[in-house]
Length: 366
Image 1 (tube, rainbow, N blue to C red):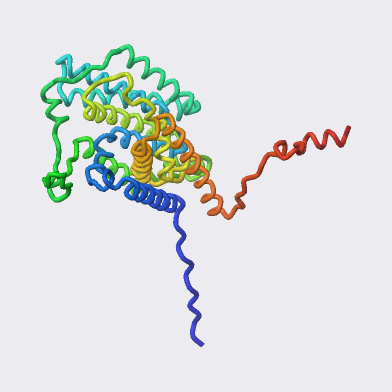
Image 2 (image 1 turned 30 degrees about the vertical axis):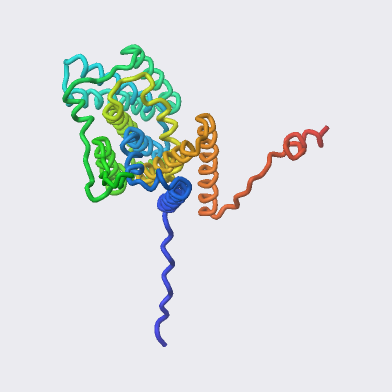
């Protein structure tokens, strides 16, 4: 008799991969809806590239937040740090005391300082991340308003030339009403986004730090038992997040050309929302770094779709909040099904007209 050849079980998709695929499908659906609803605007290739051109700083902040969230942490100071960097660099350039490289290294220094401070206090002193980064947010906002209260335009010729630089894609563009072909343009900030996405994706996929971060975010006690230096891993995740926020501030200045106390406002909330939409779990340990730009694109598409529909700004926030609820519930359902747990939306006993078990026992004893 011949030997039996049992079939091999199919390889199961990792949670991070599954949520990333779902995030990609949702983005394609949202963009497809936008194409069908407003074909004139969204069929232009430049509209898609402008998501990156006008929001490069947000993409970068989201990348830094993604690293921290995968490790099971949070950093709500990134928006304020981004704003502080824009004003500090604008002051340096307008004072004539430094050049573009000096402003860039100043941005890195400010971001690194916040990252080191947050990383040490959270990792080694074991203080709650929300409290520490909330203090960092207030500190950065206070420093921002202390430096300069009014908008400050950067008029230095070298910076203006860099900001005005465009990379044209000659084979991709749109024909206007006069029949003239207009090629698509990419701004310098987009190049920074692409470079950071590639570098951070490689780091999270093929380096020991990336593997350790997933392990720490999944279960810190198990990570310690595996010999992983949990404190060091958490520390460097916040250092990277701060450094990324500094880069984001410099790119923000390249995009707007001015320092302003409103720069980076609510970026931390948008970054968290974009990461959730990109399949990164708030609990940590699950998520694909490429989900960060996908989630950002989804968020921007939704906002642009709402704006194109003529919805008021306050309703835009309401719709975005409701969609975020939907994404969080969807993630919970997917993870519950993956863990073969029964997922049900159960009402609390008091809402059903029942007393909690403790009160029932007390009543029976009485």
